[in-house]
Amino acid sequence: MSFALSLLKNRPEAEDACQETIVQLLKHWDSFDRTKNLKGWALTILYHECLDQLKRQRRFGQFFKRATASYRPAEEEPAKEYLNRSWRESIIDRLKPKERACLLLWAREGYRAEEIAGILGCATGTVRVHLFQARKKLKKLMEKGNE
Image 1: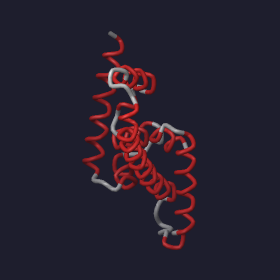
Image 2: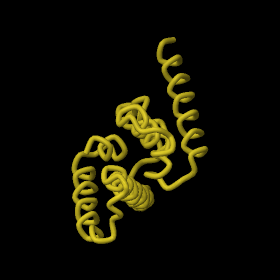
Image 3: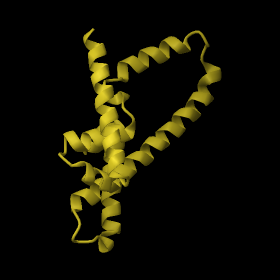
């Protein structure tokens, strides 16, 4: 749940992603290779479900933005958008979803790059690049915040 929550930033959507993960685990239980790591398999499914949720959010956000553009005065939009964005954002929120996922699996869950690569379905080198980029961005944002 904490992994889904840190990716989605919304408790109801994180709960939905976890529930869907459980459904998928049960649905495909017979095809699970018992020699593999169950937690890794579950996190892989959860990660992909979270990515699907983020895609749906982005699509809905774009649709909503286009649909409501004609109802908002143009001079109010930039100020409102800035206030909402600055209120919601934190340092971790500024990372890309894959960077955030790699960082959280590495720092919070204690997985190695090879294990994260298996969960996210990418190369180990790609995970290392995401971790490097995430740490670099965090350092830059934290230094900027201290000024």
